[in-house]
Length: 276
Image 1 (cartoon, helix red, strand yellow):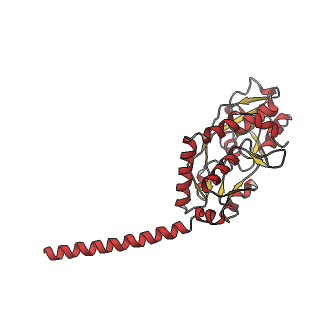
Image 2: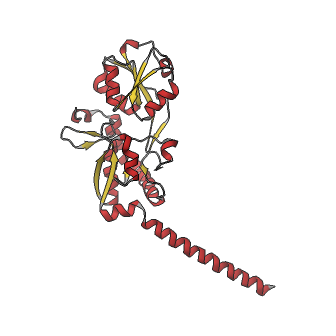
């Protein structure tokens, strides 16, 4: 019995070692296919975004890209030891462009949603925002929250294909909804008196208010949704996700994140460099 038992143990160990060897080989092969290996070999990080989402990605008076996401992407490329290359892409095609390898990663103020997560993988959230309201001044004191806008007499605007649009359809189903190609157009519609309110992410609304809304708009700045923003990558790439999450942790704990946050989210000095 002892001999049989020992033989059985040896056989089991041999099988396990064989399985470990196969697993190791599979892991090595998977690592070779990681986007991060492509980036290192290319010597270039291709970052997809849509310029125009204040203060995350914008164009300055010289025609260069700037913003919260742009600075983070530059830090990411620097950490990899590669060149940063921005790829400006229309929002409605940004996920398909990622999937067809037009760029390596989406860093564009993208909210994590279950629908998007079916198509892409998200790294850990790098900032949390929510939907807020820019209100035409004629409604001051009458409309005090998003609930008051849930009425057919109100017209509410937002950007097509965004979580702002989703929030309006989900939480303000009775309101008349007007969609626009950009969040700036939607906000201008309110400023010009052609819509009662616009709904969009807190950072953009805060910047728009500081830039054009003072004296003309009411800013209901209490977010009424919870929206984590994260970087999106193609599915099936655990090595890239691992690197991104470790990079984010380092960024948030060595002072770099705070400097970028203070510059773009808390500060407004950059507005003077913004392309009108």
